[in-house]
Image 1 (cartoon, rainbow, N blue to C red):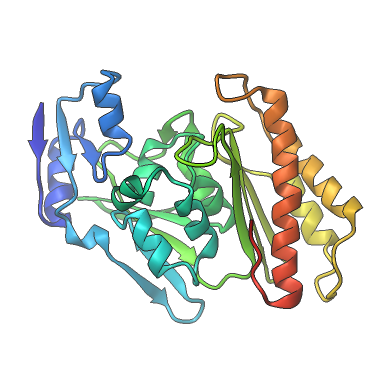
Image 2: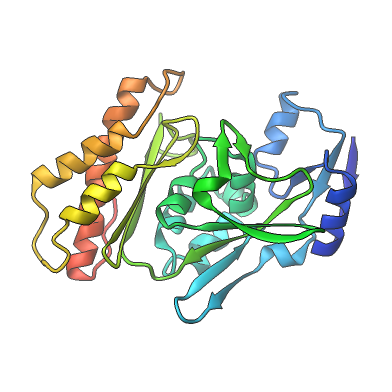
Amino acid sequence: MEFLRPTTLAEALAVKAERPDAVPIAGGTDVMVELNFDHRRPEALLDLTRVGELAEWSTVDHSDGTVRLGAGVPYSRVITELGESVPALAMASRTVGSPQIRNRGTVGGNLGAASPAGDTHPVLLALDARVEVASVRGSRLLDAAEFYVGVKRHALAPDELITAVHLPAHAGPQQFAKVGTRNAMVIAVCSFAISLRQGKVGAAIGSAAPTPRHARDAEDFLAAELPWTSSEPLPDSLKRRFGDLVAAAAEPIDDVRGSAAYRKHALGVLARRTLTWAWEEHRTGVRACA
């Protein structure tokens, strides 16, 4: 197995064009597990840890505060540096593995693995994030909803690398929650993210379908039914209906972590709870979370 170590993005893209079979590796928190268990044995690994351009983030549009998050920024930095501007992504990052994993793992790696259970995926969907990918042919932006095309399959061309994620900063109340078989360092049994912004609702599920996905009917229902100008708590009937629609969006399976029936039930609970927390912030201006 060859180990390729570019030091610039241009060099990395050139190597990927020449060796499209090379598997990108940054934190290695997914790839190395697969190698250790002999689930894959690529001809080459493309180490991106020395590519400084991937480890930066910036605000790229001062009119709406869009954050461009480099694919190599680790979860620990998302938590400490983006907790105020993109709180749901920081919430999801806090649930990833151990401190050591959070110091190594990246949102770009989460996207590259494209696992239905990836913790950041529901947040990217709920916030209508865009995934920036590049090759020697140029760069392009993909809506997060277009990025996931199957179980652990994504829309990248063989010669492309994920370079960044574009997210709205300060986009209104947002929340993330997941259920696991224990309290920490666990793969999600199911997960859910919600955002409320400018009369629009984002709602997305993880680990409960072949790909992470929007709960479209739930989004449309809530956007139409929320009393946006009210400062009152939401009625239980509205929260229950929202939870039911979120659960209906799932296509879960039975596996060692949980049954399909449990996943649907848990998603309804997560949807009601996160909506309650997000609405509390909307009406009071004070962020609430578990």
